[in-house]
Amino acid sequence: MASIRKRTKKDGTSSYMVLWRDPKSREQQGLTVSTIVEAETLKRLLDANGQSFEIAQHAILSNEKRTPTVAEVIQEHIDLLIRPSSGTTKTYQTMLDLHIRNVIGHVPVDKLDYRLIAHWVKSMMAKGKAPKTIHNVHGLISAAMNTAEMLGYITRNPCRGVQLPGIEKAEDEAMFLTHAEFSLIMEGMGERYKAFTNFLVMTGTRFGDATALTVADVDLLSQPPTARINKAWKRYGQNQFYIGATKTGAGKRTIGLNPALV
Image (cartoon, rainbow, N blue to C red):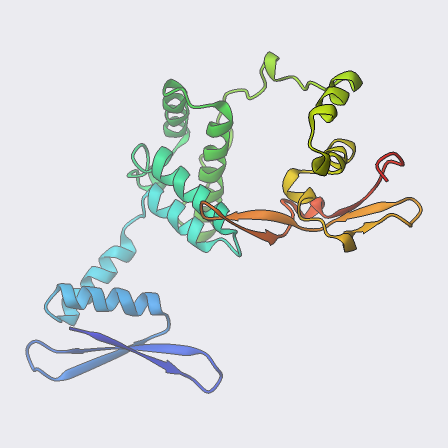
């Protein structure tokens, strides 16, 4: 079987040498590549083709000429994300596996057009998927197609201009508690949660932002008193959580506190 040896250069960068034994001459051969992905690909092809470099090289060249599928491009887009949270990566991976891979995932990316995207939207609606879900998955496809444009797979994002189902419904209009209703809730609230509940209602902060606050983030003596929102709880996997950045850059802010809350 072929093997891989990592070499570290004087400047700190690495290269990878793939070693194998030629099936005809039985002499050891080697080829240095710049990335571990290239090395692993060459090793896999050598092992699958009796250590024949000619066959492996032909397979590599053929693969480079092949247009990637929609699923492959979206997977590449996910893999190329810079510093994504594990929760975000997991969500995108689930979208790809559940709603894309078995529907339009097999389509060569350069064949994906307005018509196919529109049919995909209709199929999601026919399955009873919520408009918000369709918007979110379409957003992932569109972002991946932007990446495909930058990588030279396609010349234009086919998701542009595709009509999506409306999200707003009459029954989804914002509803607000009256003072009497809120007072009733506070009467039944456990004592230890009353200050926190008041904080949520009077500041409008997200639950994950509010629960990440520390004493150092709250200044009750400033004029006006303030709370600094600069972090939030994030989900890692199913049941693990950690403190990370706020959902958006604009989420980092300093808010004034109501005198009654202070």
